[in-house]
Image 1 (tube, rainbow, N blue to C red):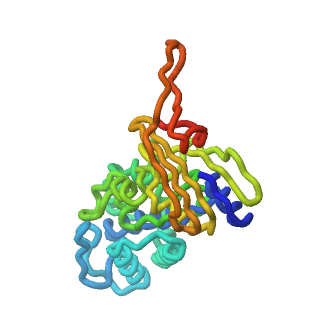
Image 2: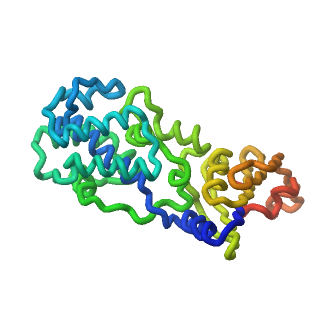
Image 3: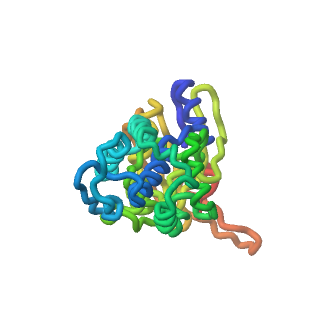
Length: 300
């Protein structure tokens, strides 16, 4: 991707490329998961007779007393049910609800035994979705870490979730889903909205830059990001954006040019390869002209 624009905007794009962006959506998701578990364990209850159809267990404890904590939980539940977008304003609002719920003051060791058992039973099969696919973090450590209320300072390089907002219910449901009936898994939502299952850049490299331009090479799994995502990038940073992409597995490639969010030109084609006569040589992309020498490599 080649961006050209005002120096201040180029500096912001560089921060995005390096991951130097605060992922407010991640805090809102983690706190949402904690509130979901607190409600499922009966630590928080709604102040009205409500049945949460996507997961009846969340409101199975029934109507609770009219306390500040339960009032806040009821408000948060409405946002979960509505699938609120995790943009900056909503993330700050959801964090305020989490603070008012008092959940952050309830350390693991202070929870009733039956609540800890209930939370552990729900958390264990979702650990890979709610923590990290390779994480072995104990539920008690995870819970108390959230109570510490530490906001991550960085995120993944070229994190597209900070560009085009995801939804609270989708991210609570997790990458593999299975928690909220009728709500798409994050996998399905991401592939539909962003075009890729993991909406961030891999092998990110800033190959060229100046005060008013920056060129960033990166990979995404399977295919290029959706055009809507690229348009939002161009619009957010009020810039001209040229996007070259290629996927050798399916032999396709293309180029798009956006001006402040508007698509103004587009080309696409099939990769063409050389035919080496020496067994030690590898085939190289020779055409179309739109893609030759425009990308770091041609995918796989």
